[in-house]
Image (cartoon, rainbow, N blue to C red; front, side, top):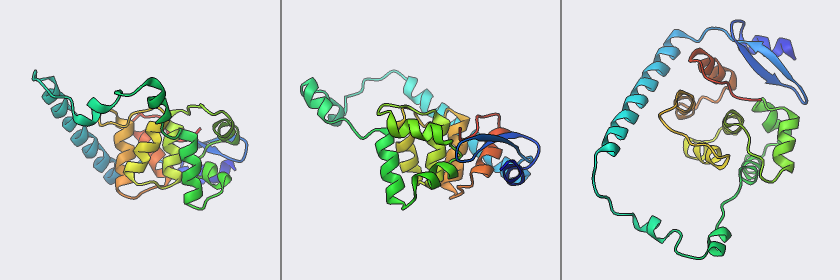
Length: 196
């Protein structure tokens, strides 16, 4: 398994590759200069966009509460608790079924070990790491809106104030779901890699 991970990932950076029940380290080749440049430009664009939005939000002004938010919380606590959305685990297993994948295909493609996947399946309120939730979004080849939704169900935001999010968004928007290529880019920009 180690040879497969090394040949797929290269030889200059560390990554993890999961087999059925163990994690093995692999190394990355340097990211292609053109791709690194495109990602760096995309990060700069997104980060400057976030700064403009923050500047606009910091300007003092009186805002009306949107009707959808005003209505939220108008009922009793019991009514509100009846409207709880599906959990991360429920959403994950629904998406796996919708894509016709087996559980093992999905967690192996996400480079998540069987032990972590078992926790997600058996512990109702288990909250995976953001990198784990993102790895499943990539393994399932989710479009951006569904990937954001899945990551949010794990309890994490997806914003332009974070390089990890921007890099992941870049690859998803471009329809590139190769976890090794995404991990090379994350590693190159000093971010945590996807998987366990």
